[in-house]
Length: 413
Image 1 (tube, helix red, strand yellow):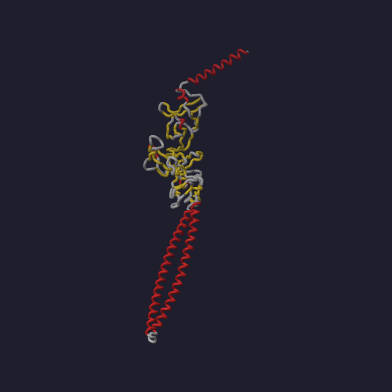
Image 2 (tube, rainbow, N blue to C red):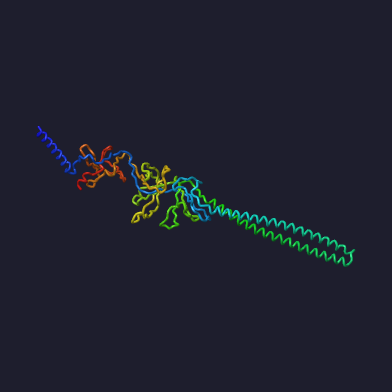
């Protein structure tokens, strides 16, 4: 009994080995019985023929933020977080205002002193004017009395009459001298006051300028968008880095840019061979690298009329630039993010599509390997349209399982 059982087991092993050898050495025209190869299901539905290209997000509208003009010694002491969203009027960065505030205090003190000197000069001018007027009035009165004495010459002696005329002439001369002195003092006071006013106005202008400079120490956003700080080239092109706290800024330079995320577009490179297939207004699908789980829909906004040379590869390539506009803007999107732009050039209704990896070549004809109960079966198909990842074919039914690996080609190798 034990010998019979051992013989039966040996017979089973021989049969299994023979079956394995048949599967291993069968010809390529026979169906494969392996069922451990990766497969995919043929899908029926609308097939979108696309031109796929890559690019990055750019803003269609943005505003620049510049450092204030005529404000020296600009050093950044605070700045908003790069990439943060801001509204119009929100602070973006602040400069060190301690030096300007110290200068303001000094200039305000000088302004008070200049104003006090001016007021003192005006008061002295008024006092001197009143004194001169009083002196002129006194001399005028004396001159009139002298004239009265001269009018009495008919009843006075000749000597007294002559003395009266001399006194009248002397009084007139003193009056004229005092009037001239009055005019001189008025002109001198006016000149001094004008000089002090000019000095006061100069100091006041410096105070106003310093106050203006202090008011410019806080830079606010000129529009809605996100903050993108520019490169600081003060240390040379090789060492350029975005502006940061502690950096010195030259007046009038561009510090940051505020792109409007509502105008984001994907700027992609289109090869010259694909240019004839695309036109503005076509539907697009945008897949961003940071968010591959959420495709964005949109329209092809524009295409550059001429090619642009790109030095990202060597030798340099020439490509057209296509701009895909998004129908909706995700607040997570930022300029500079990379992504893929799929431009829909045609639509096939009720087409059978399979992965591009599932289409192989047999004698120069496209075939797919159907996974049937008894193995893989090559079936010739007609390729209707081809995309980078999938192919529309005719010759198989929807729901068919197709292999993604050509087992027969591997055996030939």
